[in-house]
Length: 228
Ligand SMILES: N[C@@H](CCC(=O)N[C@@H](CS)C(=O)NCC(=O)O)C(=O)O
Image (cartoon, rainbow, N blue to C red; front, side):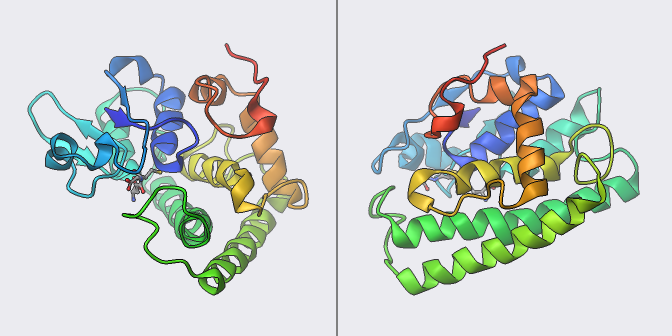
């Protein structure tokens, strides 16, 4: 498995899934440092994932899979234990519905904002500086965060209303984490009461603490995280 430090949202969605599923220790993990000319964009990795992005999972039979949600779907079906992406067909549909909304309208918006307003990852990604587009994405992320906050306002603990988080909660958690990344300056914090309640709930879970154990989240509030 090829990943990145915990500050990077897509491999981090997968990492949190693996810990929630209890299978994280079954994979050999290579953590790229993600420098602008980094290994994620070099030929050995491009042969496994032409997009040059993490995460990438290479199977023993030589197949490779990328896209965090696709890898999670494969592993959720393959392994026993709690189905993190929903048990019944209805739960699976609901989880995918919410996960798509959260990924597309919140996390991906904040990621786009990061890329067009900041030079962080160098010339392959930061081709276009566009503050107006960034501000549009910021507004979209906030508007959709408000809709998810309202969905959570009926007292439920997690997106689907169950006792344990599903994949949409994982993407929500990582979207909140990335919103708090200092240069993004759009923290989905206690002003979104119900999103913040989920974030606080996540922080107490061993899966979350293990996922951030590298200490490379870039978030001050996770600096003294209890490590199980
Ligand atoms: N749609 C992909 C996005 C993957 C992605 O954008 N990964 C980022 C890290 S969060 C990356 O590898 N960026 C570095 C690069 O493009 O060089 C997914 O869901 O996994």
